[in-house]
Image (cartoon, rainbow, N blue to C red; front, side):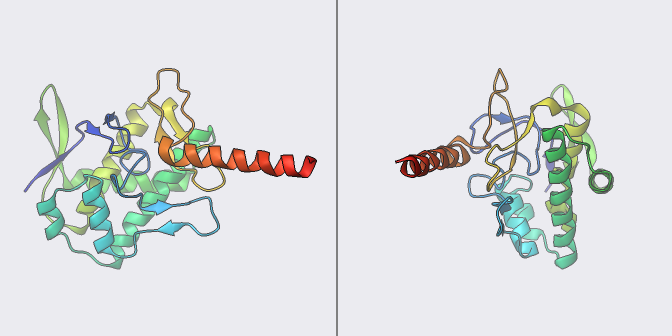
Length: 213
């Protein structure tokens, strides 16, 4: 069964079309369940990708592959390492963009190399008034090919000015696309990091009040 990448998809947390990937197809990533890595800025981040089977499950939840393809995919540690390397390279590239820093050349080279691999494995097909990437087969890289394509689409077509790093610097530093009209969004999720930041501020005020009291 063939699948196509490039069509507008609804972000599972925001409920509206996600224009491109940022680090994980969309800022919510891993669909409505979880990201492939949480708490990146903490001393003990939680990585959910421990095996190739975990990668396939994440790819299915993130809508990178359909159910029929997910059943067929099989790979080992090497395929998992490649996917994790791509994930980290994408994070380094877009977090630098979100902060206005220089993009690490080594990370950009990884993204470019994986994009070339994905492009070589797929082909363009007409859809509506444009074209999308079409993938078939069951090679281990099938789980992350659409991610590499989406990352380069965002790099080359933008909107890079809307790439942001979550303001919850104490734990999250996740990436997201700010689709608000005035680009005022600061948190990757309103029900998660925004609430956590509010609770942190409340706790800080109480601590300050006790110290002054």
